[in-house]
Length: 338
Image (tube, rainbow, N blue to C red; front, side, top):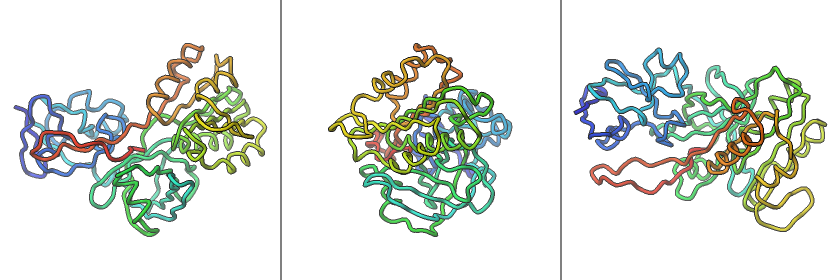
């Protein structure tokens, strides 16, 4: 039977059980969110023993070389001694401002206490002092003095509920990351860009658009933001103002249901994109938000002629709660990973 040593104590793992599930089952607190290998909030470091290659999938080479792995994807065959993510991966940050962008979306500005390098559109794990972790995308630009996150309120969501109802400017958290490959890369300024997302998928898209414009992108930029109803849209006026300053930018807010009105399209996001941009071969695309929509759009864009290397997708997976200690059953998911 595989065993894991953490903080001087050995823990047995059931057959097929991951390091994360085994530790959580036995009462060890490990930061985690999506538990699907995407958010990277469960990063741990191997101090002794062999880490399966799958447990390091998607990590930077620098992290792999230092023994870091994803606890949710690690199924060791033998003994493994592990430690939590070190201070080298986490930066203390204070909440600088909290602003309601809509009834369900909160803009959170964080001021890191030391330099924090990232690319606009990447995501970070936000860790509360009690170890609760969730991942959120960055809408800010690297030269700005604060990190901007868009947090959607989720029913019974622990992190979103705390940020909406209890958190105050000055509160201290930790930021881990960044991670993700959904960001603007200069070099082809004339290439048309398609950016499409739902809900708070707007956060990374907004960051990418601003970054592309700041770096002198000259080709057409189409930004589609979708919601079920008009109440799900936000930052509409700010993005319209940005569009007015750049001839290459076309911003399209869309709703699935509701009455047609000036400036807001009604219909399925995929159909509206096809109608506005019928010939997409040779474009570059960024897709963020609802995982079903992201995966469907990615496939359709590939079939429409986009190269896979030009399709950058960031699906927002829901967080998954740990197994109840001793119960052997899963509780219902209660918070969104972004």
